[in-house]
Length: 400
Image (cartoon, rainbow, N blue to C red; front, side, top):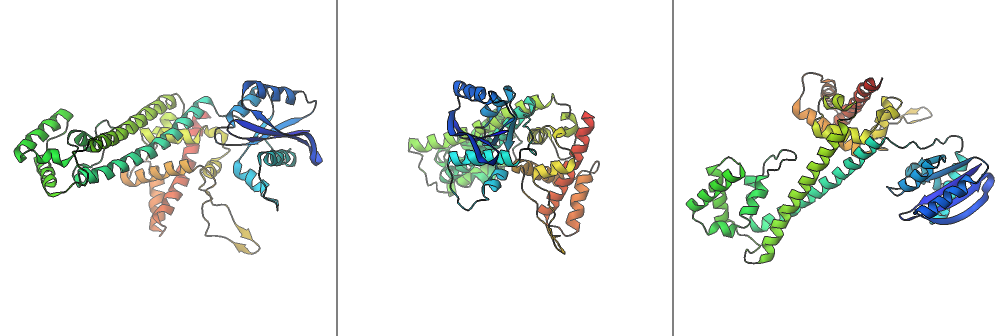
């Protein structure tokens, strides 16, 4: 038998081939991620007249090209969790690390775990696409938050105090944002000060009707008083100030538009799945959270029971016993999907806000834990644990 360890990098991989007892078939060498060199590697692997297993660890998205080539050639390929490989490689006194050394260690892992390793099974294309969109959604959420913080800093210099008056609850993915619309029209208090109060009220009323907002005279008066009493730190006379403010507004709008497009695409793809309607009807899960939840969990059939799904989320509490000691105050493992835990927290928060009266097993369980004296965050984790078990049961019913 031959274990082929591949240490994945961005544009190349380091390959080492070993037999049991440290017999070197091929010393470590580099293979570029291009068609010719990967095909040459595959031909070399297929030339062996004995059992061969290719072992590599998941490395962001860089390993996908190698895995897809190996699987298309029918080669037994194993993708190891990076944390497991890290623990395996840590069992040494000398902490040297190079690509060549790592490829040898990965190959040795294949020899040591030859009979327990299972071949990698790629996810269905629909779930893979949903997960890609879901992760990009998270990236753009962080970008949007950063853009809003940057805009708020600029507004403190040109329109101090305006956020307290105009900031409200904006519906998710709404094309209307009153604060951004106002800043595009009146981007500095100096432009409001030039007008009399009556002139500004007329101008503000026309702007409200044009943008589709309900005219609020008391709000307009409050804004005018702010312009008279507050002192902007950024001058309106410089062209840079206007450019920076308007570009900050544009960045917020662009991030919001991208998020809306991503969610629309996710909903279109997820609607083709059998479990979409079932997940969409669960309490605390709306049109946005449902597709994000499906994208992060993927095909639920790959889990053998509800506990496996809970462990995948990293909210399981593994037992701890030693001698006569039995640990009871255990923490969640956090060895799982952080994105799924974040989605779960949002679902539990939605349940706390909506307080469902029907199909409220998860909400009632969460409130029960709070009444028992558990901290609210602990109660939310317990509620999400129960939610995932119900999710597993209901979605599996669809496929049974």
